[in-house]
Image 1 (cartoon, one colour):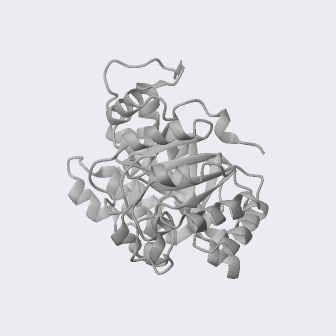
Image 2 (cartoon, rainbow, N blue to C red):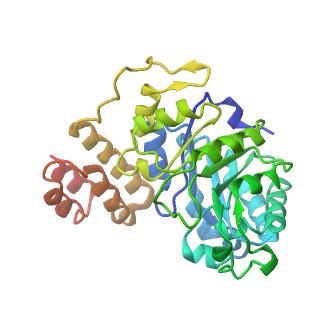
Length: 341
């Protein structure tokens, strides 16, 4: 197995998977600005099992995004097995990830994402189904935990399985399986995307599986915050950055310029002061680069999808409200360029 994870200098900075966000254009932008690994949006194994064409379109990628990981979600091991073969043979990414961490209600009620964490035997079957059907490195994404009351809401959960489960227990009961890496979102299912992130539990997980890669995820929005975590928990292999990269794909390179790696120092050397955010002229260049990439990839539909990114890029700048009103009406890349002048 060609395990790319072992070849990346620590700390690994990964663009975490986000539905509706981490498309090819955004992955290319983040990779260009320092991300070490990129993840696809969630891809349904059932869709790949029955009608794969649309989902294969969702996960196609540009070689500039490598190392690139396709994330799968669902709840049927037999669907995971078939989907894994399809992705391995047709898409040819660098790795495959299994989603045990999505807290979205429609995913959870379907019995997928976080709803699988209390169902250890089913989770083990799914991990085995993926590992047995690919030579690519397999990773998993989990949450800090799921409570009994939440688990009862999943139609796939048996009553006996509907109980509190922490990420520690989940890892203890799956650590013998041959997955290579785990990304842990340090909030519970109930915590959603707000509240404190339990970095201690992520550090403890690394102690349970020292031979596997462990990335921490949740609440990283600044280089200072990233450095604080990396210094306090030096055994963690790196960070998964999600919402922190909204409008700030340059966050990855900022962290690299500011933080020590484990056992080495990125060039240039560690700065004494946190890096300043780019000035607006640089951000405008990134915005145009992003718009051109998404238009090339998705044509007119891409211009609709770029709007949310454009709004994030300009947040906090003087005159942002007026500029936002113009940008969300733009119907071409040229019009975006004119507005940004």
